[in-house]
Length: 226
Image 1 (cartoon, rainbow, N blue to C red):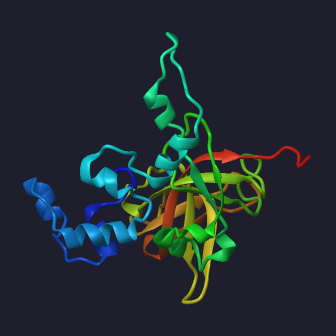
Image 2 (cartoon, rainbow, N blue to C red):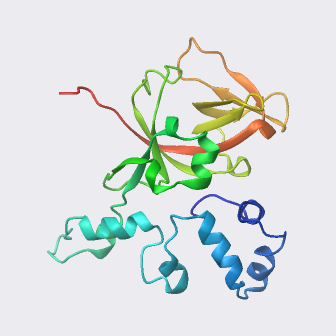
């Protein structure tokens, strides 16, 4: 949960268990029930169950697959460096248009929604990647760039950082954007979404209308398609 930026209360809600199901055993340093673990793994499907059992493998399933395919890395003395190989994660590249929205993508992350995978050396831990549309973050980001993100929650926002945000417009529509998230002058119930492009105005939105949020960890740009 620390890796995913999810609080205990949020995790309990997402896996459908009562308050305290996780927090109480965590505080008491005792075990959790098998059915609770099963519910957890059914929701957080990228977690490797073997890692949960004995920590002998990589925590994220994509890491396990990337270890098999990655090149061998050597240190200055010519010895294979296991940690360097482990760090070459494989980030799933999703098609947002093929889902019902960012929140649905975060909650499911089903393999059939993956277009491809991205492997970048020394990349911070990421949960996925998406293509950016629009010019609100230009020139830092332009339409067609790929952003790699780490899912988090509104309780864990680092103000001033860049985030991928899903905002509820009404019962049928959501607004997905990449913006700097800053504190709002309207109080703690609001946050301010700020664009890099000076032609786009900042906007204060209610925190309760944020359906999904992820910190942007990296971006990829194609300078030419040939």
